[in-house]
Structure formats: structure tokens, C-alpha cells
Image 1 (cartoon, rainbow, N blue to C red):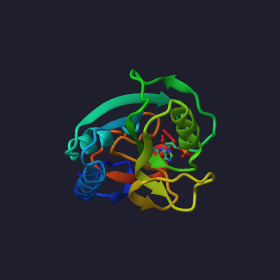
Image 2: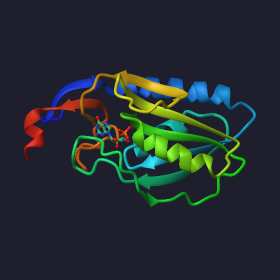
Image 3: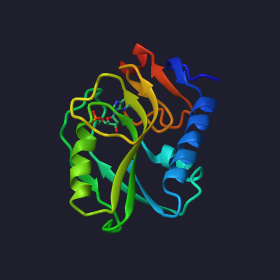
Length: 180
Ligand code: 5GP
């Protein structure tokens, strides 16, 4: 059943699952013979990394970072702060950064620069969602799940004021849900 605060489902649970499986297969092919270190940017990418990791057939390790982003507002500030750093070093590793959504790209730009300075063997990005025409800085995203129009979406890890992360689909909030 659709949550009463959701105006429209953009990607259903089945479509998300199918696309994550495709991404996992593509990543498994590309990293054949190597192991991959998946780094998720908390908290939005937590659900995506959990499902993606299970679709990858080469050896996988997981690590997590947390950066400040939206808070409870819906506009990117461009201000990025590391709230939680990686537990392991990434030097010489094949690193794949797992992001929930690429919007302006400001968060990832900062993060990539920071991670690149730690000298990984390779550094790529997989983003579940990418907002069309919104990127303010060029980011080369190796894998993208879906392109979406410039709408604020929630579900499958994405929140509004920490809510709706547990919805199994990706949807657009009703305007009334912003006012509570
Ligand atoms: P960027 O720096 O690319 O503008 O923003 C990236 C971060 O902003 C994402 O990781 C996510 O936390 C947040 N964000 C951007 N667009 C949306 C959206 O439509 N819905 C939600 N819930 N968060 C978003």
C-alpha cells in the first residue's frame, strides 16, 4: 500500500530491485578477478549498498562515511563536513563509492577529492539516482540506476527530516507532508 504522504511512486519496489540487480551484474563483470571496496555515504545510501552488495559476485568489502548534507531542508547547501570517516585505509584498493542520489554534485565532488588524495588503485561512483540537468559540477558517475526529474524524492533510504527511509519504493511527497 502506498504511504498516505506519497503523491506518486516514481520507481516501484520491483523496478528498484531489478535495476539494482542489473547494476550488480555490471559491476561484477567490470571487476572480474578483483575485489571491490564499496563505500557508502550515510545515511541515504544504507539500503542501496545492502542490496547492491548482495548482487555483486566478486569479493566485496564495505566501509561507511557520513557527511553533512541537507539536514531537514530540501536545497543543497554545498557545505560538506565529514561526520564519520572510513574505518580502513583505501590505498591501493579498488574503491566504488555508493551514493543514493546525485543532485548538484557538490557533495560528491568534495568527497572524491578527499578520497583520491588517499591513493586508491581506482575510484568510481555508483549512484542509484541522478537528477537531470541539476549537476553544477562535472562528476563522472560510472554507474547510474535511474535518471529522475528535478523533484524531491523519498524512500529506499532517502528521507525528509529523517522520515520515509524505510519505504520500499521511491516516491514524491505530497506538499502537505512538508508542512508537518
Ligand atoms: P548534492 O551535493 O549532489 O546536491 O546532494 C547530494 C545529497 O543531497 C544526497 O546524497 C542526498 O542526501 C541529498 N538529496 C539530494 N536530492 C535529494 C532528494 O530528492 N531527496 C532526498 N531525500 N535527498 C536528496
